[in-house]
Figure 1 (cartoon, one colour):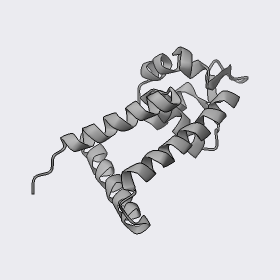
Figure 2 (cartoon, rainbow, N blue to C red; figure 1 turned 180 degrees about the vertical axis):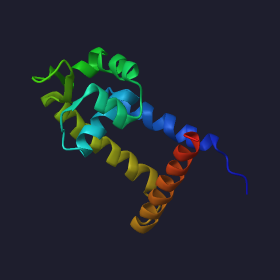
Figure 3 (cartoon, rainbow, N blue to C red; figure 1 turned 135 degrees about the horizontal axis):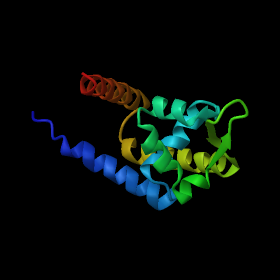
Length: 139
């Protein structure tokens, strides 16, 4: 059996399209919302956030300065140094709920033919594959 890797791309593209259409978010905004949500919206410096997202500071800065992104994040100057602290604002906290609801709907639509156990096993395997690929790309 041959693995058709293009199917991964098709699924990814469709999920991104749905999120953009239903929530008005691009991939970087989606990633920021989910990151802050999973970290209890803990304020981080630009450098810390770039490091945790594994992107360059200039890429993060470009993403943060998008008009839609500025509507969901607070950017404040640190009181102790010249760094900027980022966290979700009220709009971002509302948007992350909307995003998670949409992601749950996507999950239900994609996996409606599978049992909960099959979905959990698939999810674990997918995380393992992504981790392996990520580790290989760093070598």
